[in-house]
Length: 231
Image (cartoon, rainbow, N blue to C red; front, side, top):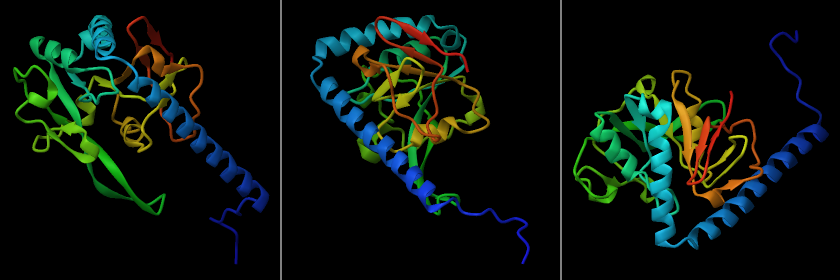
C-alpha cells in the first residue's frame, strides 16, 4: 500500500511533550484568570464607574469607532467595563449596535466533537438607563445578557468588535473566560472589523499565555491609555 495521502504520527515522546506544553498553558491561563478575577472583585462601584466613563471617552475618539456604521458590543458583566454608555452614544450618532448571542452546539469535524457558537444580533435603540432595563434584553447562556429574538447581523457588516477580557497583555494577547467563543468568532474570514478590548487597568498584564487558537486584538483601551498593535 502506497504512502500517498498518509502522514506518519509524531514520535511518542514528541506527542507527550506537546500534551505537556498544552496542559502547562491551560494551567497558566487558569491561574492568571483566578488572580485577575479576584482582584476585579475588590474594585469598588465608584472605581468601576469612574473607569467606565474614562474608557468610553477614549473609545469615542478612536477613528475606527467614530467612523463605524455597525459596532458589536458585549453587554457587561460586573467584572467588565460598563459598555452601556458607549451603546447609548452610538445610538445617538445613528450607529447600529450588535450584541453577542451564544448559540447551541455545532459540529466541529476537526475536533471530533461539538462546540458552542456565537452570533452577532441586532440590539434596537431604547431609552433604558442600563442594559438590564432594555425591553428586548434577557439573560442568556451562563447568565450573559443578550437579545434572544433578534435578527443576526452579518459578520461582514461589522466595523468594530468590542471584545471582553479577563486579562490582556501589552502585545494584544487576550485571556477570556475559557469558552473560546470570541476566538472562534474573530477567526471568521469575512470579519474585517477592528478588534478593541476595553479594560480596567489591573487587567493589563505583562504576559498572557497563548496557544495557536488564541486570536490577538488590535487595541486595548483603559482609563489611562490606549494601546495599538500592528498586525
